[in-house]
Image (cartoon, rainbow, N blue to C red; front, side, top):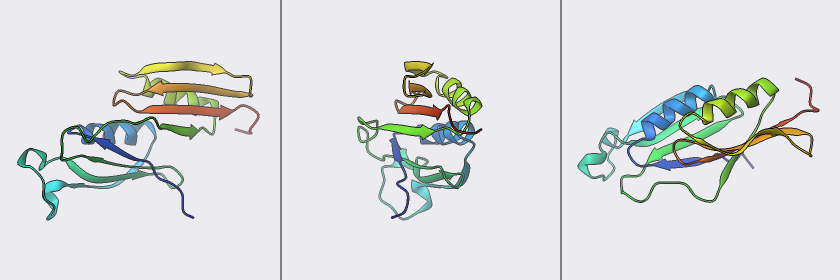
Length: 137
C-alpha cells in the first residue's frame, strides 16, 4: 500500500493555505490547477479557486482544494500527525502553526519521552507535532 496523503478542503482561501503549508513544511508545490483551467462544472465565483494542489517533499505530502460549493469545506475531527526529525523542527513548526492559530496543548516534554504539541492552525486544521527525544538528530 502506498502512503496515505491528507486532502484538505477550503472555500476560497486554498491558495493562501497552499502558500502557508508550502512555506512552513518546506514543501514543493507540484502545480496548482484552478477550476477555470479545466472543463469542470463550477459557479462563476469559483473560477479562480484551486481545484487541486499537491505539496510534497518526498516523504511528506499534502493535497488540497477549494470546494466550489459553500459549506463543503472545513475541518473534521481528524488531526494531522507530524513526526518531527529534530527538536529544532518541532519548535519551528509549532511557532509557524501558531501564527494566527491557537495552542490546544502547549509544546512540552511528555511522560512518553517526546516533545509534543497540538495546534489549531489559522485555517481550522489541527496538527499534532511529536519529536521522540531519544532518537538521533
